[in-house]
Image 1 (cartoon, rainbow, N blue to C red):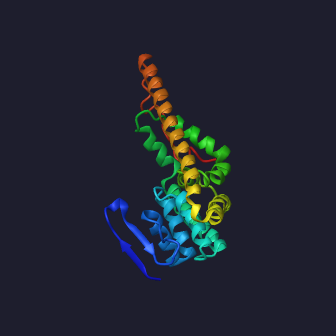
Image 2 (tube, rainbow, N blue to C red):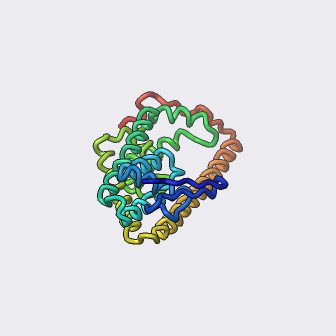
Image 3 (cartoon, rainbow, N blue to C red):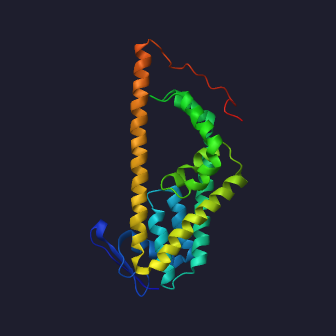
Length: 246
């Protein structure tokens, strides 16, 4: 399939695939569709894998585009969903392995040396994950940012790989199917999906920023109260090997 590349300034380059779904698209969208047309469903899986490892590549754009490409007869939609889910799973397993390698105890020792962070925060996080880890992994696959990050604490807490794979596959399959099918039926209006998914992503980002700001303010106040009371809690907590084991 002949491909032509017209480049102008970096943000405005146009990539077209003659007679393909990428025609009249530009920038990242055209590049993504061209990869899908060249590699088929494997291209979808590859892009979704990159989204898991490198979150700035948005699945909210990639998946509706996969549906749009399928609607143009360039790809089988069922295979697109399967490969997208496999891409999600492979990326998640890599991050799970990274979390397992890092381990809770290493994170706790780092936390002791970080300003405003108490070892109690690590304890609370571990306790929360022990109570809600299954739901967090499943639903986390449908939330921007968290879909990648949730794999790391799952590995740190040594969630069984079979359970992790099952929950990740189920959550990813639901999310991928919704966006790909929406892109398929919307056709050339696939960008509607991206628009509303983008709103959702912005809400998540704003919520995270607000949470971080509130957390910092509360921590600063707590440490000021401790200093005013003459309490020095630096190094007060010692992490022993296996302390976080169930």
